[in-house]
Amino acid sequence: VYGFYDECMRKYGHAGIWKAFTDLFDYMPLTAVIENQIFCPHGGLSPSIDSLEDVRKIDRFQEVPHEGPVCDLVWSDPDDRTGWGMSPRGAGYTFGQDITEQFNHANGLKMIARAH
Image 1 (spheres, helix red, strand yellow):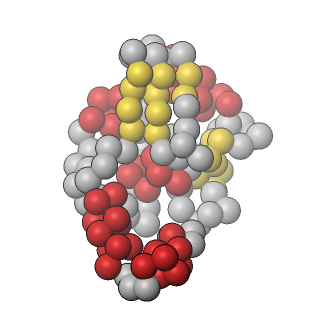
Image 2 (tube, one colour):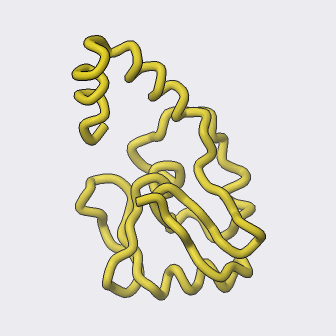
Image 3 (cartoon, one colour):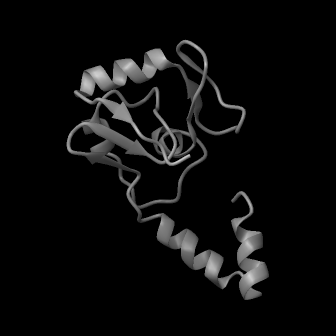
């Protein structure tokens, strides 16, 4: 988990805090929409999601899987490309400005603001 486990071990000396946080993360929202204009995912877009309604239909209360739309919303990244590409992370996808523009237009959004 990108060093989070190690940080918890250093600070607290056991994995209990790490386990509590990772359990909590399974219940946190995947995305938010601000004033019907700004889409806010943790990571990025998914080729499996065309609309905000597709996001609303996702059963969020689960661990983030290694593939699929939940994984994509958490780990996908924008890239200087056209279309979709394989992510060097090994999870999610890369996507070009054209994909962002299509998603925004189809959903009446002005922008996407990502967490990472």
